[in-house]
Image (cartoon, rainbow, N blue to C red; front, side, top):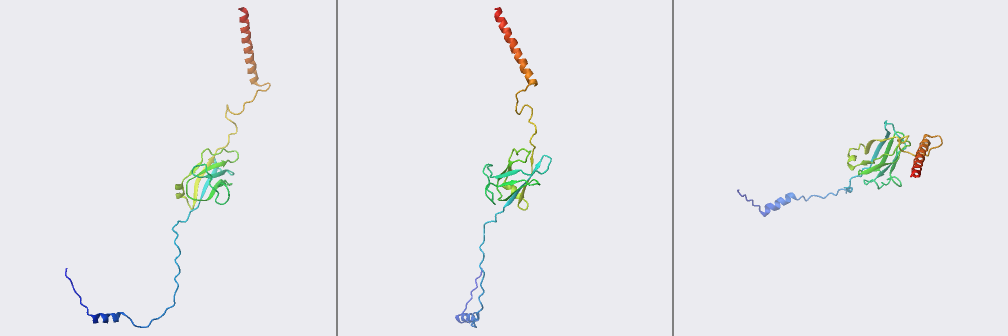
Amino acid sequence: MSTISITVSASELNAAADLVVDKGSVVNKPFTAIPPTPPVNDMPEAKLYAIQLHKVDGEGKALEGAVFGLFEKDGTTPVANPYGEGQATATSDSNGLVSFVGFEAKDYVVKELTAPKGYQLLDAPIKISAADFEVAKDLVLDKGNVVNEKTPNNPPKGEGKKSLPSTGQSMSEGLVATGLALAVAGSALVYKKREN
């Protein structure tokens, strides 16, 4: 590498400084206020979702009047109603639609608290995971159809209340036959003892 040296005299330096510094007039300009920068919120906006179910019978017809409750992940702790007091509950409308509105994306359990008249309660709760909310459309998580079975009209054979026989029923004939058999057996024992 080669080195280059530059030599500047004091008079040349003063002449260069005079060229750079402008000794002209100073002009005052009006002051313009700069608006303050709004604070930046690093917290993401909380998204509140609606959870929907469709209450139907075995044939796919909408069922009205089913009452559901929303519970925490453990299935026992009720979730508070965000728009009122008590537990978050929802009742199916005439189209079978059940809606819980205003809830964060986290794990929940939905249980049927009251079945429509003539139908059985659901055996198993409906589980909702936080991951389910990732596929929610327009902040609505649709869990699809919930099917209820009808309450059986007649109890199965061998179950139900047993009643005592009334006069003229065939069950009383069986009791009479049993009583006669015991009387004959008792008489035979007495006859044998007399012979001995």
